[in-house]
Image 1: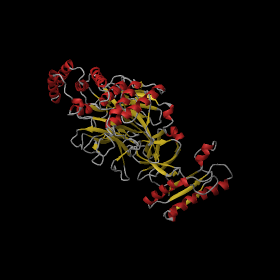
Image 2: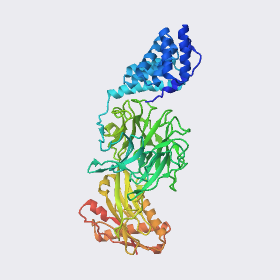
Image 3: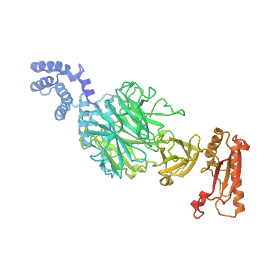
Image 4: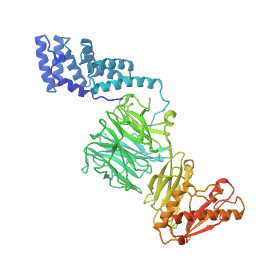
Length: 631
């Protein structure tokens, strides 16, 4: 629901001349007081102006314009009781005067803030009749009327949630906001503001289920200036954050990026004038794979005041020119604090430009075929009359984190709650696989490139890199997909894995050894698929075969053996023949892809070289395989 800075209307009215709202008092003494009061008001001498307008009313209690000016002064001085008193007097004196339109609007807004939605709607409906057509205030009034209806329905059907503070250990500052977590939900980052109003980024680790005392993230990132509203990649190794008033900045606040190697963060780098402008850029949200970045900006090309924008990396790894998220997301008002879920399709954001509970509400939209759905208000009591911003949802779609100041306005805290079923059903959950890459010969960690493919769609869905210091990686997986994972490092045999999301628990914390390119080293081609009892390669095999072709192209002196293997079902002769024909099918593909025949050899071992006992279907499936070996 929209937040209106009503003082803009106040100054607009205060600067008006002529018209019925400025009719002079008939009483001479009142007229003298009025003229002096107007001069004091123009000079922004509010106490004096208030005193003089009050003297006008002592002489002429029904003077409409003096009630108007006293209401404006009271609002500027944040005196709600006096503001309401004088606006009500205006409406009572001249209910059809166009100047009473903004007064009625204020009375409606005042009731709305008190959650008296029936009374609020009454005043809004009255004000609407008096407001100029196509004026911003009329648009705002229409939105408030819709919000009254929405709020009544939301209060009548509250969501069953239990908002829980993250506790004093985490909420240890005057104000903390914009929580973000890594893909495994074991590391929490947020922006904290000290009593001196210095903003920095803090980090807390969850150990044995308990959040530890937050620490400043790094001296390389936090500085004497303000740093905040950050986003971190799922693997916890790429950080994008907001920094303001830095010497290398392009505008008031810019977006910066830093990378983690081992335990150390790199010196932040400004994302450059492709993304940053002379305007305000802030509140980044990085996709799980680190390739798409959403943020909020007030640049002039937007739909309203602050809009949500996004940029993506191209094939070279460079960020492309930002694009506006469009009118499906952005309104004529403020749309801020985007969060893109790990599934890459669920966008959460805060807005005061849609019907809601008040202030900034949280909304969710789903991306389908390049189109965003109509934003959904998350409902009450997730949203309240206060401001709700900085939403984050765990990768599995179960646990939400966000900022709320309803308990202590102006001093926001971090809260968590289990996402209600009606919202959870709209989110495609993700899982993650994490592990460590090792040199099999030395057992030392190594850095390598990791590519994730969706086998059913035959598309690349993620690119990752293991840490150069410890070899660790984390990749996010969407539900109901079968994946191929390729791990590549120059000088090593490429490694392939296959799994579905349901298998992800079993592959977490894997230690994956990579074989150096040496004689007799071998690997299983885990993503080669044949139809049952057939030697015909399945379509899902193409990704793996193309990768093997590329490896042989990059290593032109290597010769390899392609060997087929079966389980022990059936007789030996049949199994040996089947395994040989399947190996030949792979070699034939490689030949047709340009690999010289003299570099390729085949062997059918049947069931003679099992890698697992043939006692379960799962183990028999492991034994049905294609291997390649360096000769």
